[in-house]
Length: 636
Image 1 (tube, rainbow, N blue to C red):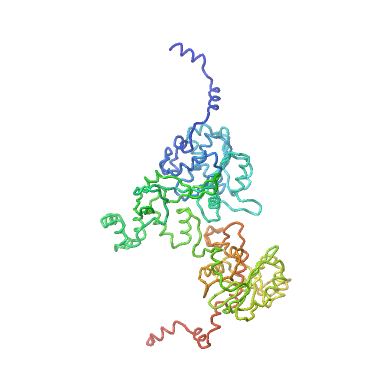
Image 2: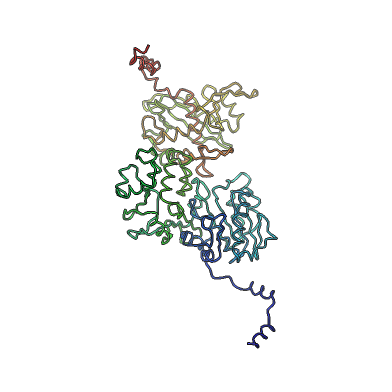
């Protein structure tokens, strides 16, 4: 023993040699989920479950994290709802990178300020709470948005700062809440594309993209649709053992009191009611009360799955591929909704839906944040297929016999013009009889001055055409002045209007159109009318097209959808926006102008033209007070 002590003293290793040998030690053979369970400590300030990370709390995150080590995968996309731990995945991937594979990394948040806040309250505490990460952290050389570690640096960037996204080469890129990033501008590409450019120099790059979806045109939903493979989480039914995907349609709750008995039994209802206070004190259950009885019905066996059974089943769940586009998968998407969350009960989901269903703004939040689906107002949802269903038996250029007006609309572009002509009848019934693209005002003049024949051979001409004056304004004004018998300039309002249109006067004293009428229209209102009438079957009050209508027209008139948009003052309003960034909407604008033209000519009262004078006079003079006076002759 004494000899051994002498040997140790004689061959004692210096500290710098220990540090050098430590650097040569290979990293532990750990997956990301194993690293998180071994080293990650959740801070009590930001976590509802502080302490060591446990994979069994959110088992569906395990495979998402471990996908980082799949050498074939280049992009990991996590399309998620709220309350499923999606942000924690970013932190676990980041911690693993710092300790196991130190390489240049960047985390992008919607804004610089948010990045600073998360760095201060989430990233730095995670590093300091883990001894293995703290040992690698060089705090003295670190800044708010750039942190230094042994062998690597970490950049925190905001998507609102293009310069910070285009300055460094990085191997690991983490993009959080990408649907809150701004879109592309005239000077710069969108932030997601800019950030991805930084990874080109690394052949083994890894990109992680996550967000709650907003619109189908948002970054995360587009990434999901463009992924090579899409995976959904399936759990075993506790009754039949079949693996099922939890979907909102199979979440049930009683709509009437009698349904409670059928679902749970009379004794269970009495026991449950003892813990509830009814809304009106009469024994009738409120929406919130009914939500307490929410349960899930297995789509395989029809048995009821409770919250407790769900919790156990989720731990034994697995990710399954539901869509695969290629055998060489580089982009993998994981999609999950709130029904799987261990932090949310079925009753909470039912209660949130009932609270939101009658308010479009709240309903959009429910669809996005709870169901992890993009929002679209289904009442005004349109598609090219819907337009083609509105074809009549009449070919192009033939006017229906029921038509009383022809109006046109022209959308002026830099290098061409789009035009449309629509026939109008009683009760706002309409049909497109022709449309196209030309390259000069002379062509527009020729088209609008042609005679168009009805089915029975009667000749009709365009009564009024509105020409968009938003672009090339002076030439449009001059053209309308020369053709003032059938043409008027128009422009769309930048803000919602009280009425569909407003007649103003051209006030440019140097223009040939000085003093001429200018039609200002609320494009959103006319798009509402077009979309609503497009859903009506062909006939009275419908919006129709001629037989053989082309697909380009059909796609352009349905290129927009109505969604909730936040304004500069923080408020939300519904607006028509393009379904994707490169969508062309010229024919849709033309149809709005044609409808506004018909509106200025008395479109809504066309049906009165066919009435006998006596009936028309009676309709005009009728007031509801007459009925009241007749029934209450002794009121004086």
